[in-house]
Length: 488
Image (cartoon, rainbow, N blue to C red; front, side, top):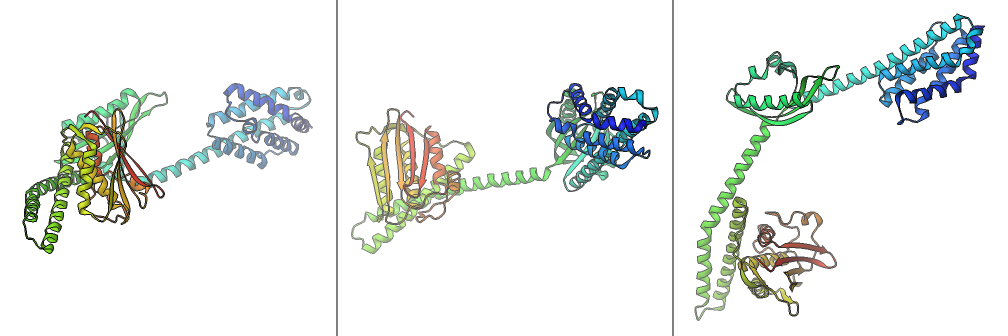
């Protein structure tokens, strides 16, 4: 009879019990992150299952109570709540039940209360067991995934105590030679030892993770490692060692060294070859110009000489670009000699020279009315800049279309824009077109291009503290607009 009265009281007072428990838990934990429904979870169902078990007077851990406890444990695990909080929740529930059902005790014997406490104890055990099993399963899964990852990665993972003695190493083959020894016992090179020990002592002293690159020389061989270190703490939070991962990137260092040496050799060869070619090419240009001045040349002879001169001038220009590239790669600077000059005169000169190579193209210079185009700059470099921009415009425009240089001025700047019609420059090309040895797609006029023209334009502008803006659309065509300060 007492069990039935207790069961009836549980059913009748279930909601007050739930609400008092909720208030008690909020006050105890200060939890404002989770909603009431999330915190209450299956508490209402658990109380109903306890009432049902009391009515049936089952003594062998009724399955509905155990199931409710398991579900509660898994819900708390998914929320990331610690196991200690769950056990305190059950202790709090027991306290609330004793307070809310205190008036029933006078009408019930100890048998019903003993059953209630027994089943609450079983619920706690079931909850803890389910939580630990899920946590253990997750840890085992993570351990397996960690082990597989380590097997496929060039990484050594290790633990060391405060004396920097290795206590555990993975993989095991490497660990057999390290475990039980300190870095001082293992590393022969004193400078290497100092770098390694300094990095690890920083973890001990600051209690924070640390990472860095170290070079280890052992038995005459040099290896490069990236060390990632974290402190290991005891139950009281004191640092008692460290755990680390050592990634061997020696092969990458060797590859980068080989690549750097190959690039340096290439640049030296470019400089040497370009310098040695300049004189004979210049001799060809001068010789053809001298021959063209000779009287009584047949028309075909003149055509051949003009073609030879154009080819030699093209080679001369390419050699100049290669020499500029070599200077930029070795010193990072493009030499300039500023002097008073007029950008309008330079533009007219450039258009005249380029028109000789492409007499069938429409090339125009448009000067803003009353524009003062005088500035202090290197006239030869400005001519080179305009030549490269005009040739780039010819290269990316269709036969029969116009290429225009427009000149304008402001109080402190002089500007020039080079415009051509044709297919717009794709965005991905615009992002790279000022890099060395980059050539755009779909070019129709080559003229001896190796992909250095815009690269050199960029550096000429940097040397003059100028800038360039590119606008390219299908309707408006492509325009390179250059701004130069008047003062050099």
